Image 1: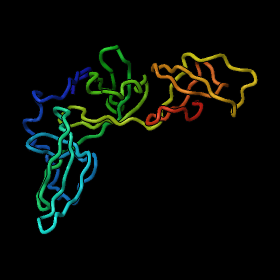
Image 2: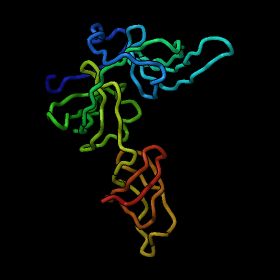
Image 3: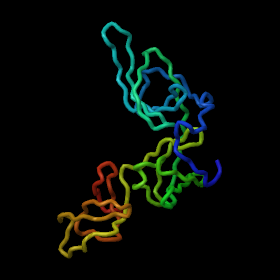
Image 4: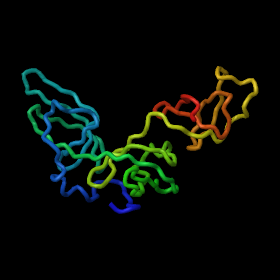
Length: 212
């Protein structure tokens, strides 16, 4: 991989998956299904979102699966016979670090090799607002392309604007709105002011505690 390599959106016309047979890791029985598993379906890498084992009366058991095509981003449902063998994709997990956001692309670095890459907005998606400089995250790679990003459940962000600190404010005081460096607004204790960092729950968008 060369430095500053750019990854565009993985879409139906993208190349890079023609030799998918070489990435087969193992034969998988349906009983081994689990969420986030990546398998090949009709030649395309797909991530398992949800599944249900079903046995309709005297008919043969099958598994109803909801998946997302990692080339197109489209979600769909299909079913597999309980005796069917599936092929899993061999993923590589890398620890990455955010360098900077130039307004168009997000520039990141492999924390182990220091190779640098740029990720477009469609690859990063809604996670972009949380990805601040120096933050580390996990990325799943398939055939030299990132197919999944995993961020920490809580993230430290700086307060850029909020009401002045009240002299009588305590740790049990009421809260006030505060604007964060990523543009988001949350409720924080009144004893916090601009320039201080807070820990935010990424899933709920709520204040957790003052950060170091």
